[in-house]
Length: 278
Image (cartoon, rainbow, N blue to C red; front, side, top):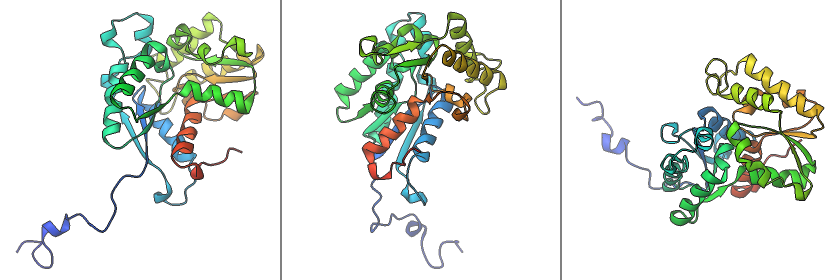
């Protein structure tokens, strides 16, 4: 006798409960894979900053991590590759998938991807074909936070070589608005880039956990910038916060644009669920 034949049929087992509402409520989208652990960390920020005492109190989120279709952003910017290799195309494919699943607010979990050569192309494609998908700019969000909440004007910046060369952060922290961006000396910039990309000890290759060598490089450059007068340091690569699990150990505030953007997404979707920062 069939196991399902006693009381109910297999069709009944898998029949959708028509009395329940399975429609997705407003949903946050994260374009990850740039790199994968950075996208995962972004999602963790959303969970950690949401007021919730049970599973159902959390916001609906979708992380799409497709590194196979998104070339390295720094390599694209530094080596002047053909436009056909622009990471914007893979990012847009991810945005299309999120949009089809119901996402209307999303962010790209990568600082370097916000350079105008990549992000401008990406925004152009989304505006043309996904007009009601709102992409939250991480760098713009970070700048707005500093201008309204922190008010520090001398800021250190740790980032990839692609972010430094594209000077994308200078577009949001402008000198004519009173800001000074302090970058490491060329040797320090190379050390930070190596701490991110080294196959032997870098954060991309060893994310969970980050190696002691990579963490030491990041810590040393933070303290170097503080010694040069930085009032806060921007961790301008989404992998760098993985190397700084306890920001309070440093003498000045550390700014994580991904953390700030996760909070902005919550405020847009469900402001009543946004946790207060102590």
